Image (cartoon, rainbow, N blue to C red; front, side, top):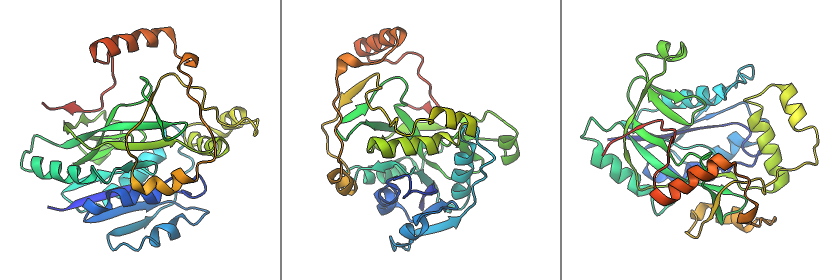
Amino acid sequence: MKISGFSFIRNGIEVDYPFLEAIQSILPICDEFIVAVGDSTDNTREAIVNLKSDKIKIIDTVWDLSKRTGGVVFAEQSNIALDSCTGDWAIHIQADELIHEEEVFKIKEEILRYNSDPNVEGLLMPYYHFWGDYNHIWTSRKAHRYEVRAFRNAKGIRSFRDSQGFRKYTSIEAYLNGETGEKLRVKMSEAHVFHYKSVKPPKQMNKKMETLLSFYHNDEWIQKRYQEKDDYFNYTNYDKLEVFDKSQPSLMKERMLKKDWEFVYDKSKSKMKFKYRILHFIEDFTGYRLFEYKNYRLLK
């Protein structure tokens, strides 16, 4: 059985993504790793080459910047990498996601466990969304708790929406024509995705968000939103956070040592709408999240 890892990146150095750490975090369990490298203006491609791994295969791509609605270009790049995967199973890792070295081999164990059961199409992984620093995670209803990150490399599987997850389609043509697709049947994984979306110096975070949102909105919207260049990202604009006291992936050690800003979490200053306060109260009391979006079919 062969396992393929895959990802995509463009100007990863400029926007300060931990893309090298992301790739290295799952490389130990991959027989190959496919990365679609966009037409970058920094040294992103060279940095990946310098990892000097025979497992890594680079596909050079040009991002279609005319497709700036709903993050469509992200799904396209993900699919380009996926189409070059030759493994029986594929593992998707995004440029700001890592798997802990203490958990990464659990993914391989789970793949081996379910490989003979055709009813299991993938693995659902729980998330740690870091916010402000490396000691707090974002746990509001706005943050997805789980997502499909490993799945059988079967015909018809495509990135869903902006590459947050994956679904199965009757054909590539149907996918391109807007077919809704079928949710994958999955088992829950014990391996967590460490998501470092919101852990940067405020000025750098502002630049990242401006770049990211430019693939969802037009220039006019971006210019209006970021007209004040000194109005840096505000980490105090949160609704619900929790203290994270577990260990971090060792690959993040160097970045953590370079942290030069301070974030102070004050629960009393939470900016949460009343209806969400009610829903979170019910969730805390019952352990069940009402009306949760689920892009998967979880098998028992």
